[in-house]
Image (cartoon, rainbow, N blue to C red; front, side):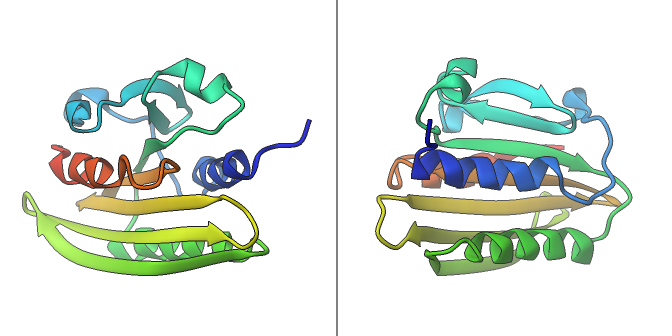
Length: 172
């Protein structure tokens, strides 16, 4: 069975999160507060150090169509530049997929709740297909630990702003 273009895009994004070269540790659920009411998405599963959130839970990950989703990954023993470089590598790697085009790129370096943050928002399309992905990457740095947030809106912008609000509302 051939994977849909949308599923291929989301799986590629999640694959890079799962196999990232970062040194990471078990996420401390008690210390991180994620307001999922902003997106309406729910915790779906944890795979190693990555927590995945989808609209309908585990059934979304088992469906033929890749859902819009966001994920969180805890990274220890890191620096601002290291996590920023990781995000840039994810963007560059995705751009290497034949036919992918990225535009509307907005990068933001700021401080939220006294913690340094960095984010990149972009649109990714693929020539000759219906693939249209609004991606938001961000991280929050606290000391030498970071919380990496990656979202993928495959529903033409229905969740994009909600995902960004969810990221900026994270308390740690």
